[in-house]
Length: 444
Picture 1 (cartoon, rainbow, N blue to C red):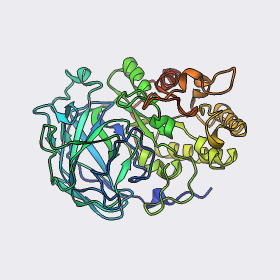
Picture 2 (picture 1 turned 90 degrees about the horizontal axis):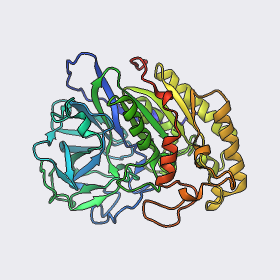
Picture 3 (picture 1 turned 90 degrees about the vertical axis):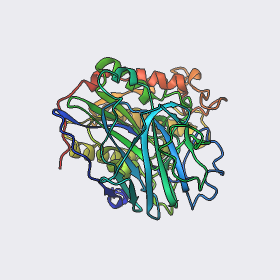
């Protein structure tokens, strides 16, 4: 199989970070939001009308501020951010970057807002196709004594786009409310109040990762997949996707040393589309194989990957054999790059009776064939059997109680589980697959 050139062409800017002399500590990814294309290409959920914020999508943001709300899965006193211009067509300049503890809505807890720098400067320009890490910055409130109280709390990451951004790299299906200023409003990230951020969005823009410096035994699990990992039909602001459920279970078992980060993209495929660019986007983003480096392998502290994909490939006409070959290639690349990693294969949930070709009996037979490969091929180090957790044995379809839509209400689509279904999926995963492992190092 010919590998897409997207992952090879994506340039990476690693901005020099402050060195923190902490013994037996390391960086571990704590939150992710896979950029999948230029706004508005994608599959947002419960999105407010954004015409006031972005009147002309090709122009993007214009002299305005963002306050994005994110939930770290690990807390540490030192953190860093990654910004993405992966699907931009022109350089984007960011300044006025601040991080604070969210109070409520777009307000920040008084005294927690901290400036963020890039190679010691308060501004950075990121070229088209590039991503960039900030310097490390202190979160004084995230100390060991308070770490238990911070579980479930969220950060407000604020930044200003100077001038016009052009096409904006984004993650459509955040299922988390964040906040925007009007175009031309200027830089307001330093403000703790909410008056400067009157507009809301359920998507994340430009920001795509947070890492924290934490103890040597800490590690991350990456949930890599499509809309059923991204959380379609889960609760807006509810943090009840299956990776969220797994994260809470692992935290209860192992404490503040395991992060489960979500690298799902609605509509994503293992091997398709054959071509993807800012000029020729599709709603599901670049293929899993072409985004694997950026969304899994470039992160710190990754000890395990759970891969749930294939239904969108089948819907778009890929053969089972093609998907299997793509999975073999992806797993080989993960193991070649991450020493000691555990790759968990997840079986595909049922879609029988869903709209269009996805729900046909013929497609369901192919799904079953792919699931049998995932279970029995020996490719994976373990199995998350989501199929068995969500299928009604009497009908072969999604269990009736898992169908209704818990994002916006309604009957559901018979493809995406609801909050109850995601809970069942998260509870079905064997925690022994993630027993704390020795310290991992990325191969060079």
